[in-house]
Length: 118
View 1: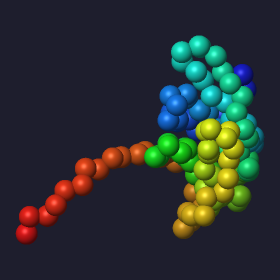
View 2 (view 1 turned 135 degrees about the vertical axis):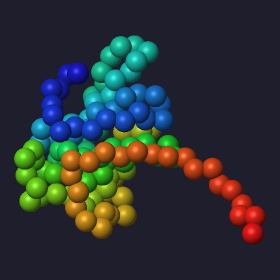
View 3 (view 1 turned 90 degrees about the vertical axis):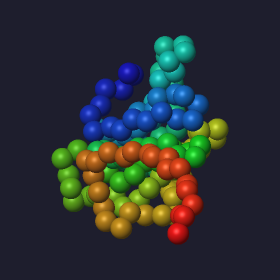
View 4 (view 1 turned 60 degrees about the vertical axis):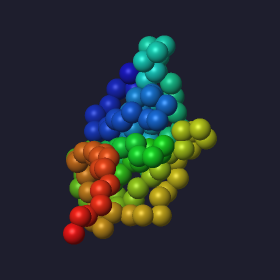
């Protein structure tokens, strides 16, 4: 990986690229392309995010919570950033966490809908 870091988050984007977001008091984003075995510099997040959560849902990637610097819980974020892979651009999502969070993971589940048989 071109930029060594800790406190970053990673997820697989809809394109299949593996994104590494934030960490080490940074806004850097890099993506790994398994087909070419190369790292690609991507658009920076709007805020420094360490110890954040990251997930890909319905064609968009989300950087959730985190802190502005490693080892600090006083500057935890409630904000969520959403990434448009085609535009290579992050934007603030209108939704915010109810409580600032850091040092957590994100998971995505697809739940099959069913009809109740009452």
